[in-house]
Image (cartoon, rainbow, N blue to C red; front, side, top):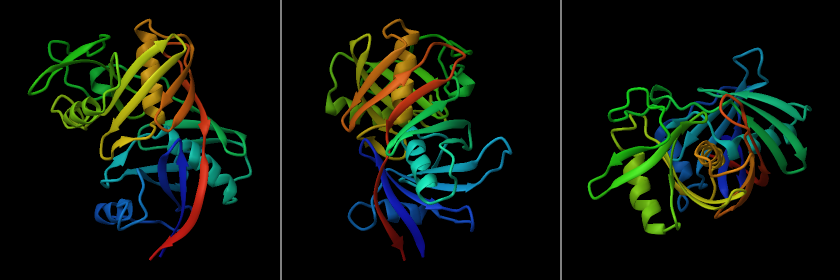
Length: 278
């Protein structure tokens, strides 16, 4: 039996489990079964909290996509994990540091269901994404072109704990999000896959965003995707230091002062229900 809590951040939903006292081993097949929205619990990602591996951190934060693949970061999930840790009595602290397989995230609970997450400074080198950039071995330029069967897409790449490609668009079209998003998420230029964000810049303080996540598909919101969009927009001179990112599930506030500095994200983390998977 697996006790769990169903949580969500802006409609990006999770099953969260406590593995601090006893290890939990989950196969990809079991995760896929649990993620099924008709035959299982249904979720975008499954989250585990485990004992810390780094003495500088409070806990280890493990993230699985709906297809069973493991991810390196999840902004909405990190905020939910902070609330889970507090409500389950795993820590009384309102400031927490979590380690993932790729990075660390600092969390601060600022309200009963509001959490501020600070992600490590974004990385742009091709090897850090990873991204196989044509004609640019460093991969540090602002824009790249990736060829798809029917078109060439102009995008920017960034790693915010997980890999993102961000496309600036004039309008958010559903068919483009799914068609281009799925094609890019599996494209050979991204050896480990990529999350694909479609960003419409309303003004220097507001963007509208839709994200096709690798291993999951389009979600109502993507916290790391919102951070990636902010970074790309600011790096390209389109945005100010504080931006509201509007997604189908709601709004996140993102702050980023510039290269080499961490990204701050503030948004909700909702406790939905508790259950047991038999």
